[in-house]
Length: 171
Image (cartoon, rainbow, N blue to C red; front, top):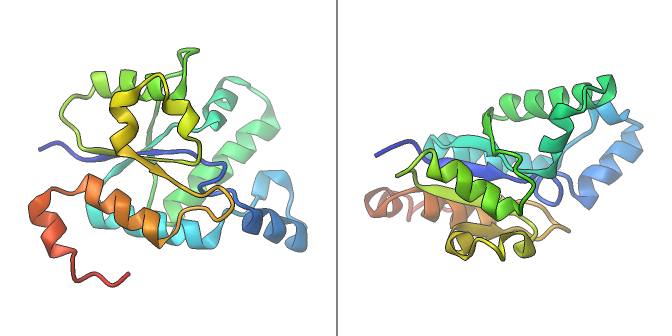
């Protein structure tokens, strides 16, 4: 079986009210922004447990074509932070000018047979791609990625044999 893939949204999954407060308290510049430390913990754990490749599906992708130096530093910070937490970005969903769900479906069409999970805080992005709804882990954007989301994504990314192995996992 092919490596599993984890589609990652940033706002509402890693950028939360907690991370915004941390940025304000620490007076961090935009290009060194904090991401929710609890969400980063669960994301890193999920990637280590499953061996999933992280594919960026966030609207942050649109900034890749920007060419603005500040935007480049912000994205570099995101990539560095994810790598430091064991979840390096392995790819980017295509930008096709359609819904996020359709863009993820296009990526999957080019990489068939891979188990996947989608971490996102907006279900409306997947109305045009109903086949992906069962793969969506709907994260509460006020809290970010948490244990409940981790467990749901873990179940989606592992087959039945592996899932049994993780049933004793208390985290």
